[in-house]
Length: 106
Figure 1 (tube, rainbow, N blue to C red):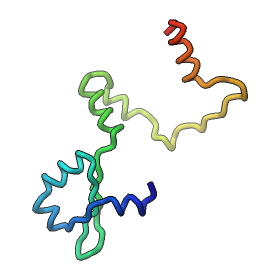
Figure 2 (figure 1 turned 135 degrees about the horizontal axis):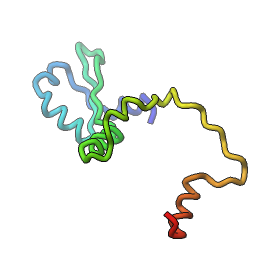
Figure 3 (figure 1 turned 135 degrees about the vertical axis):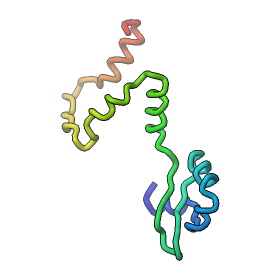
Figure 4 (figure 1 turned 90 degrees about the vertical axis):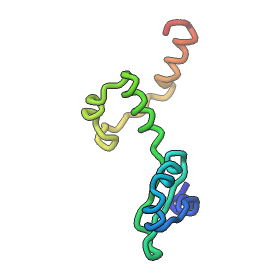
């Protein structure tokens, strides 16, 4: 979805409406709605629903599956080394894992 398409699907609300109805707006954002906040007709902010990946991380931390201190030590996506492509004819690691599972080895 392009930026233009995203803006067309956002509900426009004024800063004053946000002040008066903040709890409702945030509940609707939690449930997937996005908003463009305007002041005197000018867009000043955008309220977006939570990222599903962030929600998954929060659940994993709450369940004790993931140590939040580890997250701080992970490199940012733009800091990761560029991945070299596999040689032609080699299967992807995910395909090898699936094959091992099917064979009962994993």
